[in-house]
Length: 153
Length: 213
Image (cartoon, rainbow over all chains, first blue to last red; front, side):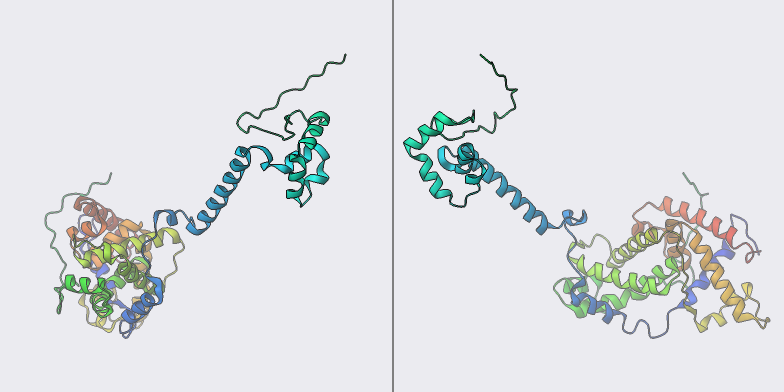
């Protein structure tokens, strides 16, 4: 038998023997029903969207995004609201953490917005960022650290 | 870049080839339209029309019946889910073959070199195949064993080819598709098909030299 590179006839004959390899005779009888059953069981899904191809779960991504947006909105609303919108900070400046930790913010806010109380705060506070109204005001865009210097007379 | 010698003639299909015959009954396009609208009976007909050829292609690529069974089913499931995107630029037959080919090549690349043969039996017709006599003597009392050994060697040699080379040999030399059909299915040009076929055959000839002397 020839087996030169130019003559593949014998090889082709040999390869044609593979056509005689078949699964058992009844294999194809119910092949299509098995496929249809799998399709009806919901396996034929629409092709995945581009983000699914990267393994991104849209629901989880939306949850994380919404959480992040809520945090950002809360931060800006606290920073932008003037006066007593941040009673915890004001309370911390005067009386220390015990007041800041108090659950009754409404009562403490009312007390500190009284003119007498504000004067007391302004006169006695050692907090450099407390203004005359007794309320701490921080501009988040300009907040930066400055080294403190003291002059001893 | 591999360049095969120019081949003079190339019949579209080998003799006794399972060439894609014209389907009887409704045209594929009609069945595809009906299946798109949820007619599962129409899709069932399409599966029955092509199941054997799709299965055979995958089987000859994997040399494993269980893998071929899974991949053939997944091919038709995938085809159903993508039916809406089938534009009809090619025949349904070419399109579904393309899905099978891509699925099989991806599977084989993931499987890498972990080849486990699970071969189907040879059918009874092989006893009447005159070509078999050339490879397995009909006088020997160990004829069945010799035939099984030949089948294993043949499949083993196929598995040594790269996926692309094996696919071309499977589609052309085993299944009898023309170069043009293979180029359509594999989305490459005819020259690439010829080139792959030439080098795949050269390698096969070296692996099976004991049988081809």
